[in-house]
Amino acid sequence: MSERTAQLKALLDTFQDKQAWIWSLMEDDQRNQSGTVDNWAPKDHLAHANFWTERVIAQLQIAQGVETLERLGDFTKSNEETFEIFKNHSWQKLQLWSEQVHSQLLEALSLISSEAFEDPERFEWTNHRPLWNQVIFTGVYHRLQHACDILSLCGMAHEVLGIQEQFASMMEAMDDSDEWRGNTKYNLGCYYALDGNAEAALETIKAALELNPALLEWSMQDSDLDSMRELPEFQALIET
Image (cartoon, rainbow, N blue to C red):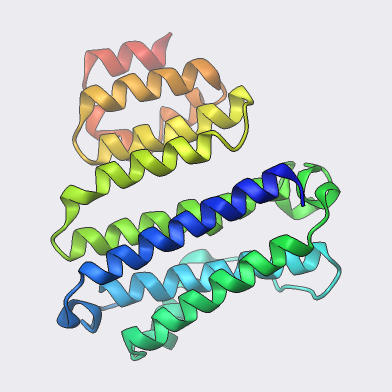
């Protein structure tokens, strides 16, 4: 097992522990609340995260030559279909599914070769990025966002900042390249902006752009940063 694979598995285990802690804070009525396609309840967020984690497991299986996976062209439609399929499932069933996909993801990681995991040109569908990059985004970052959404829906938004900062630091440590470190800082900066913490957002986005200037173009249109558009400090940042 490569060092990065071991790091990623440790990160996934840490996330699973944190997610279990979040679940332990929830009341039964919060776990089993029903949502709508436009206004998800906690269990809808969990089902969505599980579905996309299964997709990344399938990608790892493709990398091993085990099976093929049909591409999803319209993500919005896929998310709506996933909601409809799982909206009547119990929290208990969805939690069990989450535990299963976690175990399956760890197993799939154990079987992948270092070459397949690290080579950015190995698979056309990773868009010139190494496979581990895609796994960490869907398997950790995406699930983390929905776990934090669940916290907020359950009236515990005050817990979210510490969790976001903890995992941003752990994900940044996965790779020492300026591009990767810039990307992880940028994602944290977007969270600060969405949370209304303009000072932290400006500082973090500035550090991200210094590390990865390629993010500048996207920052000019990224809706996550809309709360800062009129700030002179932000305007000066993106005009440099």
